[in-house]
Figure 1 (cartoon, one colour):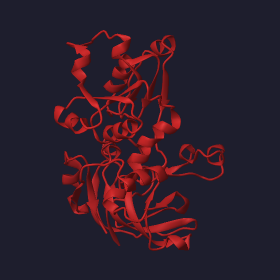
Figure 2 (cartoon, one colour):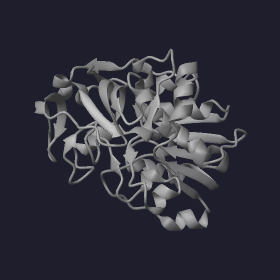
Figure 3 (tube, helix red, strand yellow):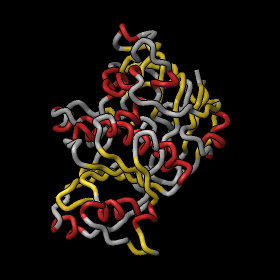
Length: 322
């Protein structure tokens, strides 16, 4: 039996009676060393994934103890989330994460807030020598930030804004700043915005409003690229207000609530909207190893103290497990 944080469809609980996962063909069994809490984990507790019950968590570093690839045994790894069927049009064309029957760890299958977890072997990435588990655990969210540059050609001679002052916004802003683009981060919390001062200008949401109404902006005040990473539906409305005509919005947020948009504004102003999810792990591990991106220390907890961990206001909270 093993310890884990288990979501029963309505609430999470710490348990010590869950069975050890079995390593199926093509998969690897890992002893989880550290695992970080993502905002998606909090959204799951609010009903983000109806019908899901199981072990939570998807940001992890584990030690491989059993594997379909014997060369991985004993190595420390991070892993991608989405395991596809390997047969459909999406899997056959390199879009496994969009497989209609894909299973995502901690979201639609058992995840990493546990002593052990399995995942498809081809989704695992060994940690480079010299990179600690405490650093490498940022690989998954950093990969999501790097996905933007895979999807959109960013012209560094123009400008960009990131809406949001949380963890994902911090990673995205650092990644975009690496190419030298003029960067502005827009948030609601002055104390959080102060963290961005080394690589971006900062603005408060309210700077773009007069009372409750959006303030009229000139083209020079707007942005060629706007990344929405606030996690709040108000963010996409602000993005539409801030983006230049014929500019690009990159949507990183996922919302539990539904929202409405003026689609005519998108058509008339020829705005490109790009949805963006998971990204490439190898460049993320390389940036972490080389120190090109850095993050505040994680606030660590034991699994049994998960309620305190989920309530933490630290930059990142996580679990030391193995």
